[in-house]
Length: 154
Image (cartoon, rainbow, N blue to C red; front, side):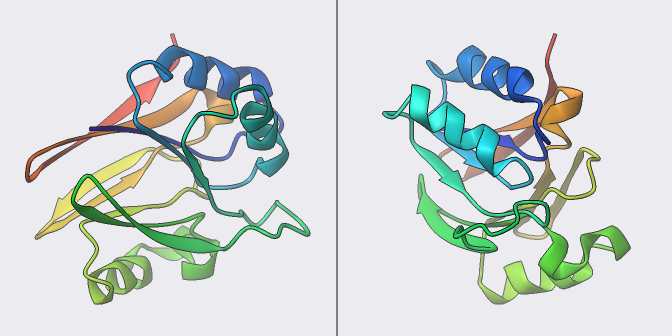
């Protein structure tokens, strides 16, 4: 199973559409981590059948979307947020502790605009970077294995 993870499009809809259109045939789930809710809403309007999970970012003013979410997908518990509620610009420990307390297998966040992947004990951690800069992430789940893949538009 494959997940494409995007964050921080900041009105760069072209990059967001390019990411989605490149991967819509090989992705089972898209996750958008905030700061561009209007952008991702345009994607969902054009492609209403895509499975897309969305959380609000700190720049998504007046959003009705949640600040974080927890879902089960492909046998894995995924906890995701934009990151600002967990102060990720000052370190990842609060977010990682929350993910561990929730017994998550995967934690996803944005906000810093910097791609980041790490495997810590039983937890896979990813920041896809900023879609406005052409960065995004892919997660492949095969059985118990989780592969985190930082990506960039060509």
